Image (cartoon, rainbow, N blue to C red; front, top):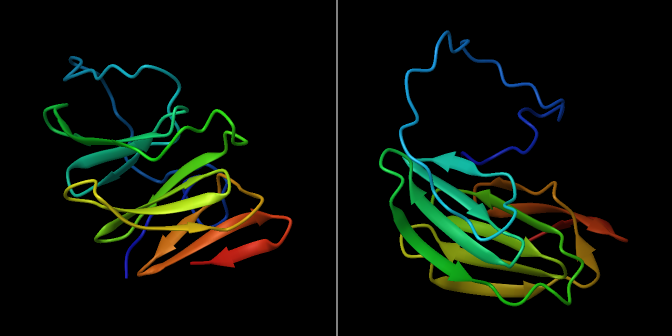
Length: 142
């Protein structure tokens, strides 16, 4: 199984154990967003993120080219709690009381569920299961 873990590790310390980058030689690419984005996730040469307007993006990590962009709805009336987690085939996007499943290749919405109240930014995908931090329940598995 594979998935993404927010905050770097299972302990959620924000620490990533990797090699130090000794020097930066150049900026390889930039990508403009209309507003604030949430934690981007890198998987299989693509960068996935969601912005505060409820728009999800898949960007080619090598070229900075947009692969797909899809809106999961107007989040202005929601609590503005947005997050994204990935497995091998699906981007799990939570926007306030809704969770969406988006196909990683096309961005097409494959399912949507209303989980009531609000979700938080600490979602984790493990295989075909999404673990959602949820208020007031605690945890919800989708």
